[in-house]
Length: 447
Image (cartoon, rainbow, N blue to C red):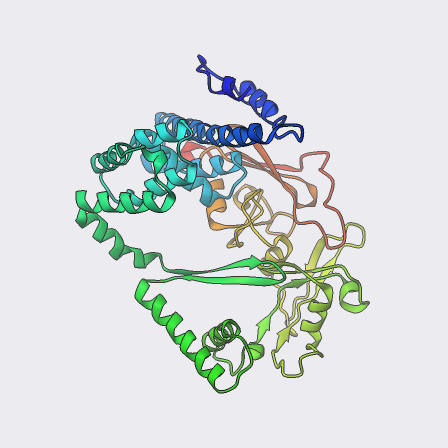
């Protein structure tokens, strides 16, 4: 069956792809022999490469066609490409960031790196290995990029004989030989990309990361290491890793100890969790669900840690008795204030675009204010910058339903539904039975 998948055909349609996917689901049977299972694993890996190459070709053709159609309709070259990456992201069930990355990868493979695309299509390399080649040659001219592609493919065994690390080293080496100025200039500009990130980690922890120039990163790590070693030498019983982490927090926040850092907690929890000892988890902004006892300890002061001097601000949120959805927020800050923007951010938690999950940066009117949409909680959704800008691109529509449910309609007519997060302790609302309001699509004349 897998052999048939690799046989050349005139052309496959979408229903053929569905048939292949259905056939693949029958593999991995417990009755199969070990040798057969290994063969299936190997051939399926090849199939993954072929599928990734097909996705790249489809992506590049789609992007070129969209730009051509929009420019033929009067859009400028700059406007013609807006929103394409976001639509690709929705089709792949990923965030706009990854949609843009997939678009860039596809266009580079199809138009500039034919040998890499061929190796991917043959299943000799993975999509990640192809991405590494695209990344390491991004600063080169098209001609130099094609030469790197050809030289990598001409090595003994071809691209399939190289591991991830070898591909990166070879691509860098050839790139520097072909255009040392471009490679050096790219390295000097990389400092502009420095930034800090915060991501959830298991067990109510978080990953705080920083992309820094090599000198600054090494210096910061050395300073934390020295502080930890000094504390250990004077009898501190905390581990070296704990000391480095605590020192980082203390030096960034300016507090005497890591436990004394004041924090305003955007914490969503039911009244039963807060007051009656219920076990329903609370939701901490930027982290996600946390155990109910931990949330209660934070808000009343942790009785098990008398040295914890942190000041925690509490914001009360109000829910509908019937649906459990958030409907209001306390307007005065007695340890919380209550602006509409903060309410929407707390209610939606992350970007409302399906599969995005990025932090909320913009509050969007599903029905535009310019079209008569009210500035209210019912006509608002939290979005990241990329998703909000994508909705202002040509041909995008938004359909507003009851219960803050929103449909996003892309220029190709595909619809993606977004519900607000389910209430704590409850199920998500049922799909609405009727359309409330439709936000008109953006036209070229108003793009």
